[in-house]
Image 1 (cartoon, one colour):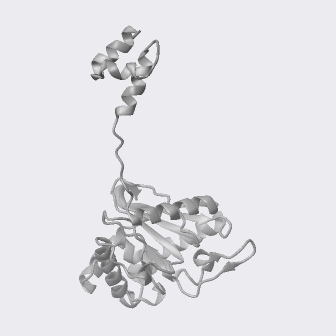
Image 2 (cartoon, one colour; image 1 turned 120 degrees about the vertical axis):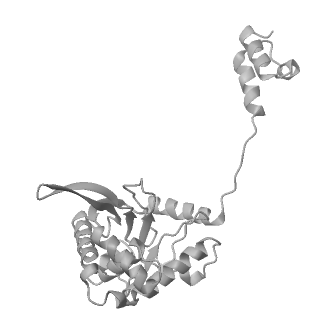
Image 3 (cartoon, one colour; image 1 turned 180 degrees about the horizontal axis):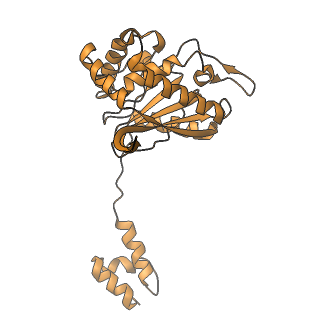
Length: 271
């Protein structure tokens, strides 16, 4: 016997009555027909690319093993954006927030060594001799984190050239093994203008990861005059076993000061 609701669904879905007879039930109800319909729905599959599987593994390990905390600080970047435009013309290479934040982060290595450290065990952290800064690059063909090694000793033109080369390599995945090895801090870039806050995962073996969002126009009152500034929320995810909230805030404040000082820094092209 087929109930009226079951028959109505059979007619709606075009399922032959012989299919329900094959179930071997004395009474066919609507739920039985729905079960048959579910069996007939094709399952679409998509094999994840190798680079995405690697990202998934790193994210899973990070969340499983690192007790992360997060702090964010707003930074006025009007002068920084003007500096980037000027330096682009001078070095004839694309210079943006990525290049300038690499320079600024590298300058903090000596003052904040724990932010570039690796946790060895419950009692010990390994300090790095140089700041090796990984920078996220994603041009639509997968997420890569190539590294500017010993960034504190790299002039701006070299940093800009390497990042330009990394962006080109990301379109084909044609990186050398050394390009992706031995980072001890990560700078993650979020280019969408509507993204105002981003929380990066901390790469296994790192102490922290910095997130840079696109500057947004913000109205401010200055001497009774409304002006517009470009402000970005710069976030820091950090391993709470190595870094506490106070140190995270001090690091972001020092980074903010360093970024603001870059337009007036002597020898900006040879940093």
